[in-house]
Amino acid sequence: MNHAFVDASWHELPDGSGVGGWGLVLISPGQLPARFQGQLDSPDNNVAEVRAVLEAVRLAPPGEALTVHTDNEAVIASVGRGRGPELLHGAAREVTEAAAAREVALQVRYAPRTRRHMLVAHELANEARRGGGGSVPGVQADVLIEHRPGWAEARVSLRRASERVTALVALDLESEVPPSAQALMAAVGLAQPGEAILVRRASRVAQALWRRPERALRLAAQSQLREARSLADASGVQVDFLAS
Image 1 (cartoon, rainbow, N blue to C red):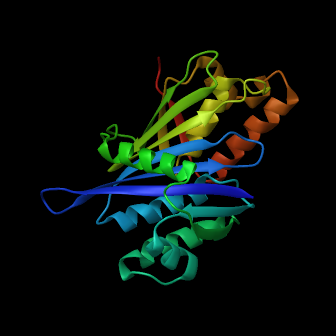
Image 2: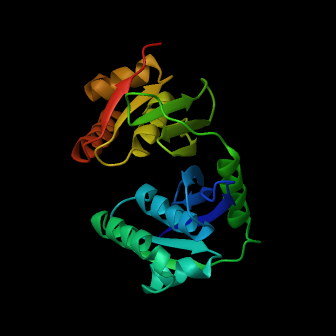
Image 3: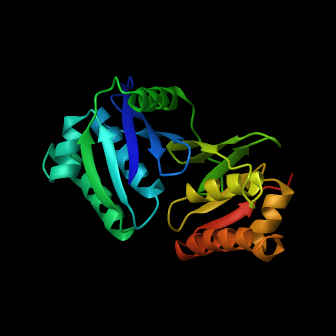
Protein backbone atom coordinates (compact mmCIF):
# COMPACT_ATOMS: atom_id res chain seq x y z
CA MET A 1 0.00 0.00 0.00
CA ASN A 2 1.29 3.44 -0.97
CA HIS A 3 0.42 6.54 1.04
CA ALA A 4 0.45 10.23 0.11
CA PHE A 5 0.05 13.11 2.55
CA VAL A 6 -1.13 16.25 0.76
CA ASP A 7 -1.81 19.90 1.51
CA ALA A 8 -2.18 23.22 -0.31
CA SER A 9 -1.67 26.93 0.20
CA TRP A 10 -3.40 29.84 -1.57
CA HIS A 11 -3.13 33.63 -1.81
CA GLU A 12 -5.46 36.10 -3.53
CA LEU A 13 -3.70 38.59 -5.79
CA PRO A 14 -4.65 42.30 -6.12
CA ASP A 15 -6.39 41.69 -9.48
CA GLY A 16 -8.72 39.12 -7.91
CA SER A 17 -6.94 36.07 -9.30
CA GLY A 18 -5.06 33.67 -7.08
CA VAL A 19 -1.82 31.75 -6.85
CA GLY A 20 -1.68 28.39 -5.13
CA GLY A 21 0.91 25.92 -3.98
CA TRP A 22 0.59 22.21 -3.32
CA GLY A 23 2.83 19.80 -1.46
CA LEU A 24 2.86 16.06 -0.93
CA VAL A 25 4.87 13.35 0.76
CA LEU A 26 4.72 10.01 -1.06
CA ILE A 27 5.54 6.86 0.89
CA SER A 28 5.99 3.53 -0.85
CA PRO A 29 7.04 0.24 0.78
CA GLY A 30 10.80 -0.21 0.92
CA GLN A 31 11.58 3.34 -0.17
CA LEU A 32 12.39 6.58 1.61
CA PRO A 33 9.63 9.23 1.64
CA ALA A 34 9.67 11.40 -1.52
CA ARG A 35 8.63 15.06 -1.33
CA PHE A 36 7.01 16.97 -4.18
CA GLN A 37 5.66 20.49 -4.51
CA GLY A 38 4.24 22.74 -7.20
CA GLN A 39 2.85 26.18 -7.94
CA LEU A 40 -0.21 26.95 -10.06
CA ASP A 41 -2.81 29.58 -10.89
CA SER A 42 -5.84 28.72 -8.78
CA PRO A 43 -9.21 30.37 -8.05
CA ASP A 44 -9.20 29.14 -4.45
CA ASN A 45 -7.45 26.89 -1.95
CA ASN A 46 -9.67 23.87 -2.57
CA VAL A 47 -8.69 23.68 -6.25
CA ALA A 48 -5.03 23.62 -5.20
CA GLU A 49 -5.85 20.89 -2.67
CA VAL A 50 -7.40 18.69 -5.37
CA ARG A 51 -4.37 19.33 -7.58
CA ALA A 52 -2.19 17.86 -4.82
CA VAL A 53 -4.30 14.69 -4.94
CA LEU A 54 -3.99 14.56 -8.73
CA GLU A 55 -0.20 14.83 -8.53
CA ALA A 56 -0.13 12.07 -5.91
CA VAL A 57 -2.01 9.79 -8.33
CA ARG A 58 0.35 10.73 -11.18
CA LEU A 59 3.46 10.09 -9.10
CA ALA A 60 2.39 6.91 -7.30
CA PRO A 61 3.39 3.51 -8.74
CA PRO A 62 0.87 2.40 -11.40
CA GLY A 63 -1.28 -0.63 -10.80
CA GLU A 64 -1.09 -0.36 -7.01
CA ALA A 65 -3.35 0.89 -4.22
CA LEU A 66 -2.89 4.46 -2.96
CA THR A 67 -4.32 6.10 0.14
CA VAL A 68 -4.25 9.90 0.09
CA HIS A 69 -4.40 11.67 3.45
CA THR A 70 -5.76 15.22 3.61
CA ASP A 71 -7.24 17.56 6.22
CA ASN A 72 -9.60 19.13 3.65
CA GLU A 73 -13.20 17.92 3.91
CA ALA A 74 -14.14 19.42 0.52
CA VAL A 75 -11.48 17.27 -1.14
CA ILE A 76 -12.71 14.15 0.65
CA ALA A 77 -16.30 14.88 -0.43
CA SER A 78 -15.36 15.68 -4.04
CA VAL A 79 -12.73 13.06 -4.78
CA GLY A 80 -13.60 10.37 -2.27
CA ARG A 81 -17.41 10.51 -2.48
CA GLY A 82 -18.21 12.23 -5.78
CA ARG A 83 -19.88 15.15 -4.03
CA GLY A 84 -18.62 18.51 -2.75
CA PRO A 85 -18.50 22.06 -4.18
CA GLU A 86 -19.45 22.44 -7.85
CA LEU A 87 -16.19 24.31 -8.47
CA LEU A 88 -14.29 21.09 -7.76
CA HIS A 89 -16.31 18.73 -9.95
CA GLY A 90 -14.05 19.04 -13.00
CA ALA A 91 -10.82 18.73 -11.01
CA ALA A 92 -12.18 15.76 -9.04
CA ARG A 93 -13.18 14.03 -12.28
CA GLU A 94 -9.63 14.53 -13.58
CA VAL A 95 -8.33 12.73 -10.47
CA THR A 96 -10.63 9.74 -10.90
CA GLU A 97 -9.83 9.51 -14.63
CA ALA A 98 -6.09 9.60 -13.91
CA ALA A 99 -6.47 6.89 -11.26
CA ALA A 100 -8.43 4.70 -13.68
CA ALA A 101 -5.90 5.23 -16.48
CA ARG A 102 -2.99 4.28 -14.22
CA GLU A 103 -4.97 1.49 -12.51
CA VAL A 104 -4.43 3.09 -9.11
CA ALA A 105 -6.96 1.95 -6.50
CA LEU A 106 -7.51 5.30 -4.78
CA GLN A 107 -8.79 6.01 -1.29
CA VAL A 108 -8.99 9.47 0.29
CA ARG A 109 -8.96 9.76 4.07
CA TYR A 110 -8.84 12.51 6.68
CA ALA A 111 -5.62 13.15 8.58
CA PRO A 112 -5.00 16.03 11.02
CA ARG A 113 -2.37 18.57 10.05
CA THR A 114 -0.52 17.79 13.27
CA ARG A 115 0.76 14.50 11.79
CA ARG A 116 4.44 14.65 10.85
CA HIS A 117 4.05 14.04 7.11
CA MET A 118 1.08 16.40 6.94
CA LEU A 119 3.21 19.15 8.47
CA VAL A 120 5.88 18.54 5.83
CA ALA A 121 3.26 18.69 3.04
CA HIS A 122 1.98 21.98 4.49
CA GLU A 123 5.48 23.48 4.52
CA LEU A 124 6.08 22.31 0.94
CA ALA A 125 2.82 23.91 -0.21
CA ASN A 126 3.61 27.24 1.42
CA GLU A 127 7.12 27.25 -0.03
CA ALA A 128 5.79 26.47 -3.51
CA ARG A 129 3.17 29.23 -3.36
CA ARG A 130 5.79 31.81 -2.42
CA GLY A 131 8.21 30.66 -5.11
CA GLY A 132 8.66 32.15 -8.55
CA GLY A 133 7.49 30.63 -11.83
CA GLY A 134 8.06 30.93 -15.52
CA SER A 135 8.88 28.66 -18.41
CA VAL A 136 11.56 28.71 -21.06
CA PRO A 137 10.34 30.11 -24.41
CA GLY A 138 9.93 27.47 -27.10
CA VAL A 139 9.55 24.45 -24.78
CA GLN A 140 6.57 23.09 -22.88
CA ALA A 141 8.48 22.39 -19.69
CA ASP A 142 11.95 23.26 -18.43
CA VAL A 143 13.60 20.83 -16.02
CA LEU A 144 16.55 21.51 -13.73
CA ILE A 145 18.43 18.71 -11.94
CA GLU A 146 20.51 19.63 -8.89
CA HIS A 147 22.72 16.77 -7.75
CA ARG A 148 26.34 16.32 -6.74
CA PRO A 149 28.39 13.10 -6.66
CA GLY A 150 27.93 11.30 -3.37
CA TRP A 151 24.67 13.03 -2.50
CA ALA A 152 21.85 10.71 -1.46
CA GLU A 153 19.22 13.17 -2.65
CA ALA A 154 18.57 15.17 -5.81
CA ARG A 155 16.39 18.22 -6.29
CA VAL A 156 14.41 18.20 -9.53
CA SER A 157 12.44 21.29 -10.58
CA LEU A 158 10.05 21.34 -13.55
CA ARG A 159 8.56 24.60 -14.78
CA ARG A 160 5.78 24.97 -17.28
CA ALA A 161 3.43 27.86 -18.02
CA SER A 162 1.78 29.12 -14.81
CA GLU A 163 3.15 26.43 -12.52
CA ARG A 164 6.22 24.79 -11.06
CA VAL A 165 6.75 21.27 -9.69
CA THR A 166 9.66 20.35 -7.45
CA ALA A 167 10.69 16.90 -6.25
CA LEU A 168 13.25 16.01 -3.60
CA VAL A 169 14.24 12.55 -4.75
CA ALA A 170 15.91 10.04 -2.44
CA LEU A 171 18.64 8.18 -4.36
CA ASP A 172 19.72 4.61 -3.77
CA LEU A 173 23.51 4.77 -3.70
CA GLU A 174 23.67 0.96 -3.74
CA SER A 175 21.59 0.65 -6.91
CA GLU A 176 23.16 -0.54 -10.15
CA VAL A 177 21.62 2.53 -11.82
CA PRO A 178 23.98 5.51 -11.30
CA PRO A 179 22.52 8.20 -8.99
CA SER A 180 22.66 10.81 -11.77
CA ALA A 181 20.57 8.52 -13.99
CA GLN A 182 18.12 7.93 -11.13
CA ALA A 183 17.70 11.71 -10.86
CA LEU A 184 17.07 11.97 -14.60
CA MET A 185 14.48 9.20 -14.49
CA ALA A 186 12.70 11.06 -11.68
CA ALA A 187 12.82 14.28 -13.74
CA VAL A 188 11.22 12.60 -16.74
CA GLY A 189 8.60 11.11 -14.42
CA LEU A 190 7.34 14.60 -13.61
CA ALA A 191 6.38 15.27 -17.24
CA GLN A 192 2.77 15.11 -18.32
CA PRO A 193 1.64 12.90 -21.24
CA GLY A 194 2.58 14.40 -24.59
CA GLU A 195 4.88 17.00 -23.05
CA ALA A 196 8.24 18.03 -24.49
CA ILE A 197 10.78 18.76 -21.76
CA LEU A 198 14.19 20.38 -21.85
CA VAL A 199 16.50 18.99 -19.15
CA ARG A 200 19.30 21.10 -17.67
CA ARG A 201 22.32 19.81 -15.74
CA ALA A 202 21.81 16.14 -16.47
CA SER A 203 25.21 14.46 -16.25
CA ARG A 204 26.79 13.13 -19.43
CA VAL A 205 26.56 9.63 -18.00
CA ALA A 206 22.83 10.05 -17.36
CA GLN A 207 22.25 11.44 -20.85
CA ALA A 208 24.17 8.59 -22.47
CA LEU A 209 22.30 5.93 -20.51
CA TRP A 210 18.93 7.54 -21.27
CA ARG A 211 19.64 7.61 -24.98
CA ARG A 212 21.09 4.10 -25.05
CA PRO A 213 20.20 1.98 -21.97
CA GLU A 214 22.29 -0.89 -23.32
CA ARG A 215 25.38 1.12 -22.35
CA ALA A 216 24.69 0.28 -18.70
CA LEU A 217 27.13 -2.34 -17.46
CA ARG A 218 24.58 -4.29 -15.43
CA LEU A 219 21.52 -6.04 -16.85
CA ALA A 220 19.34 -4.85 -13.95
CA ALA A 221 20.29 -1.26 -14.71
CA GLN A 222 19.54 -1.77 -18.40
CA SER A 223 16.12 -3.14 -17.50
CA GLN A 224 15.20 -0.18 -15.28
CA LEU A 225 16.38 2.35 -17.84
CA ARG A 226 14.54 0.62 -20.68
CA GLU A 227 11.35 0.54 -18.60
CA ALA A 228 11.63 4.28 -17.89
CA ARG A 229 12.23 4.98 -21.58
CA SER A 230 9.28 2.78 -22.57
CA LEU A 231 6.94 4.55 -20.13
CA ALA A 232 8.04 7.95 -21.45
CA ASP A 233 7.63 6.86 -25.07
CA ALA A 234 4.21 5.36 -24.38
CA SER A 235 3.09 8.66 -22.81
CA GLY A 236 4.43 10.69 -25.72
CA VAL A 237 6.99 12.47 -23.50
CA GLN A 238 9.85 13.99 -25.48
CA VAL A 239 13.16 14.53 -23.69
CA ASP A 240 15.89 16.85 -24.89
CA PHE A 241 19.01 18.07 -23.11
CA LEU A 242 20.55 21.49 -22.82
CA ALA A 243 24.19 21.33 -23.87
CA SER A 244 26.48 22.08 -20.94
